[in-house]
Length: 214
Image 1: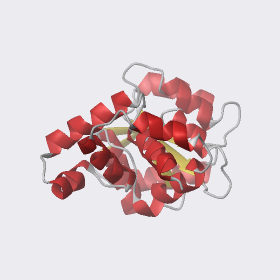
Image 2 (image 1 turned 120 degrees about the horizontal axis):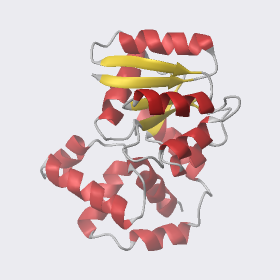
Image 3 (image 1 turned 30 degrees about the vertical axis):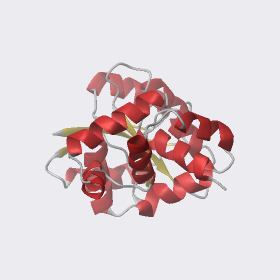
Image 4 (image 1 turned 90 degrees about the horizontal axis):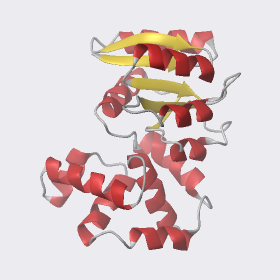
């Protein structure tokens, strides 16, 4: 059973998310928070596997809450909920360790699939959602040459794997493309994250896009 905490200051949004998630027999919504401060308290109390985190909330915003949660040992995975045209701090959430993003109008099937994905230790890089988001917020976010210097530490195989991660491919899809085992790809991704001093899969994808910017 995947335990989920929903953090959003709008009651209607929380209700809708809870109804969608609890229709999945493998997901349990263990708590709902109305702001970042309450999200931290409830995350400590209920130890969820996944936190659905809104960005704009009173008292403590989702960016700060995400950063604090990711400083914990065995931290839950954080999925940021965003309205793309309004939230200008999404890149900061990536830097703070968010596992990915969902738009608030994400179809129910994609929402539950996203929760399963991050609970399994992966990040949300669906072309229809996160790739567009990353493309927008990675522009000018860091010096292109600095990003390229960081990527120079990777082996040719790691460069191939990273390119497919940045394209939104899962470990299984990367394994099939490169004719390698999924376990090998998982190990490669972990090595890339360590070499680039990143927190998760989303951050290395952003770095790859920065380095590829003309």
